[in-house]
Image 1 (cartoon, rainbow, N blue to C red):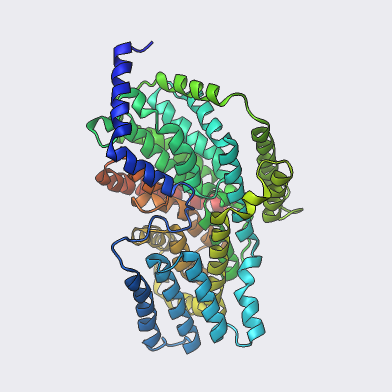
Image 2 (tube, helix red, strand yellow):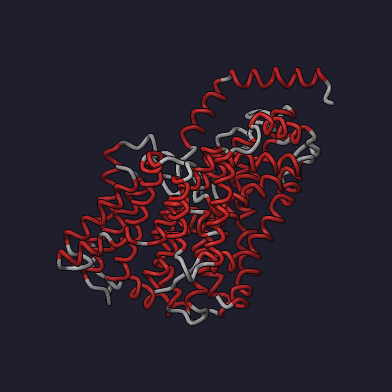
Length: 520
């Protein structure tokens, strides 16, 4: 048993922390961020930027592009559409209005002006095409799964069980956190909801059991290691499943509209599984060595988890039903792809959640974040398809590909995927990165004979989750961990670079031969 005087001292430390202004700021920041999709703003709009400038900057950038002469081989209409596309993407970054509204505005302008299709009927059909995209509805359903996890408490229960069983050492806690994220990832398309909304609250109290407090030298005792492990491993699981990160679904849609390639849920998982499991096995141990906690044993964590589980009581009827339903959905995604589309399987599961009372219909129609993501992704899919219809992507591929013809096959793969990966330093949104660059890089890759189009598409798509590790703003959930007070800003940068290079190297060394071996 712990020394009572030590426990009392820790209790006083915790009491001072809960009364402090820092805790109040963190709590407000956490409650603001939890539930914000990784595909929404990826953080708050810049407070110092006035609304006028947020409006003027995208318009000015788009106007400059439009006034430049169209490049040789590209029609003026395609160039004007590209200028509109750039305006929308910059607007997504500056946020004069919510990003989904920016995308919808861009679709309306393109449709009314006839930049993609000339007749009003055809232009309207194009403008609404994104809303019939099955992958968009798959992500919408995944947000409903997240609602079920949160409402029933099943996600927290899973995390606590793993901590109780694996958390006797600090390294074991790191692996328990990783395992909890892996279990939740197939059904939670938002890193903020999965890691920030479920994992973070479950582990946030653990450091305080050992006197490890935020914004204090004691943060490195155990808190910094645990929180950075949680923040980083969720980006690995985000690349493992189409449904673990909303931009993955957008990428699958762009692969189809750009190259005519269809990627199933199982194909995506099968192609990345070896890379993912290797990284999940390596990252907690590597961080344990390069970013070591001062406390290596954590006997109080399992007891704390057991106490929390006791407070929760036995598994409820709603939790059990949800567990059966998400297992049912996973089974359909894996084994019934030829019988039922993954999106319809997910929507069916949501319908059953309503039927069995896991969530109510009013909660489904009232989930503003899910509907916001659906509208945003539908418009982004539509806008990206316009780049293909106007022949912009084809022109870009034909222009850039010859310049890479002198590269060796290996060099061309590393160069193209590497540039796509490390350009994320310039983006504060994985969604914006996907919508802006993926169609362009897919067009260039398709013009290179080095790999099959499907392999190219998967190599670019898999990198989306992994690239979030590079910066403190690379993924939406990172804002929560960055603001926790446990991890210093400079640590985010050097650890992000270290893990970013590790992710990329393992991805290239293991991923390329594996994709060729399984025929993807």
